[in-house]
Image 1 (cartoon, each protein chain N blue to C red):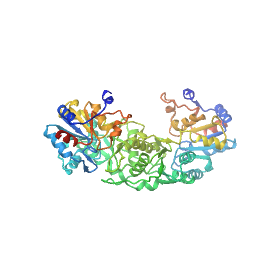
Image 2 (image 1 turned 90 degrees about the horizontal axis):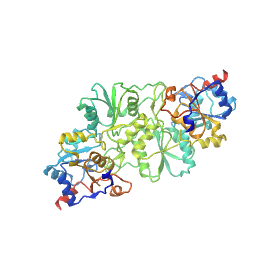
Image 3 (image 1 turned 180 degrees about the vertical axis):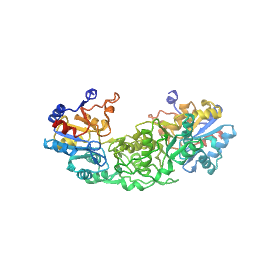
Image 4 (image 1 turned 135 degrees about the vertical axis):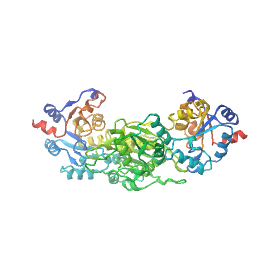
Length: 304
Length: 304
């Protein structure tokens, strides 16, 4: 609450020095921070190289669940940035990890409304996923006496961004949550919209998750940002306490809130969905410690 | 509030006499009351005939927006019940009427997520509808630099039950609501589930409406039950005050709440989604004046 009431500071050559001295790891959101769609944001590789050369740990935390960590590592590679799978924390990975740490039984199945990335992460920890892209062309039969059969061994439904959302998947997921005793309802994230292209905001996972809330009359367990579920993994892995981490992101209600919820330092970049006027609007009470135009300002300010 | 705290009375040969003496019009929900899917519920035609013979006005108020009033009249006909179009108040009709009474400009367009019934009702009052079934097979292009074009003259998005819901429609509706200044977001209803077949509950309009809430971060104007928007029409048409009407339905949170919100008498039938144990559960505070198993109990109790 204290954090929220403080005004955010424009990043300066003075404050960047303080930040680098006090922080051991930088957590980056990807879309709107590292890239926009498939286009790298100017100066990102040089900035990441500089931070690594100063011994900082780099972690990439993304709410986009359509890809697995392996697929994300490939995307970084294709854009000329060298990042390993274990530096990537995607909400697809978070969903699989949530089931694992909660000892979800291996003999139960997981129904997926979302992309291949979720299915791949589930498989890596030994779970059987159903649905996903495969159900994108299926239709429900709207006729009298039609019984829609669903697998009674489904013990969790995971919902993420799904470009192929349809009635069949919503019906399947709804029946599992409403009729299979104890069935979990897990959301990778609840982003209302995202930059699926460079030019526009399109409906995000929050759209599909809300649809399932509407039909199940239940609220999901959210594993992506701003939920701090992933933070335990980060802390264990890097043995760094939260105040020594800085979350860098373009969204107030996911990235910055995630950082604040966990007790990290926070840096908002204006290269994605949030404008300076939104940040400074009196109705906004999510205030990052610092803000700047883009990631490469870190490099420029240090050189100045 | 007073109404809610009173216990509901099982309909008896005593109370049915009192009800008939005090009420001039019966408002019936259809699904779960008159029929289930495409099957008529036993004894309905005889009961409706008896009520008409006693001079009672009959009105059919349904939240199902997939059909127009004309299509509903045909459905009644095919089941052997004679009902005229102007005795039918569907949420598809309500959506068109809402625009009309609010002087929605004829030169603006209406984007529809839902069935043919909404488009037909819009056309009858002179509005241009877009979307609906026609957009069921369209796909959005997920590629860099893709601009999803939407009609800037759309001034309202109407969302109802849509068996062919897809990302294209959600994206189209979302862009209209988020980007067209003053664009209305209208929901035919928010039923979580409905009896699309005799055997199961399937996601209802509440699912598609919630999806749009998730991506637009806005709440809709609801025109179907339990909103009392239609009640003004009923009162004007029949010149009967609300306390002289009785709402008969199978759902507590739509039908009975609708009746109570308007100040009507209310009768719950247990032939649809609500069981006696749900009605009498301590957590339920929507209590109809009367309840009975099915509509034809009215006939039987009068004969007894």
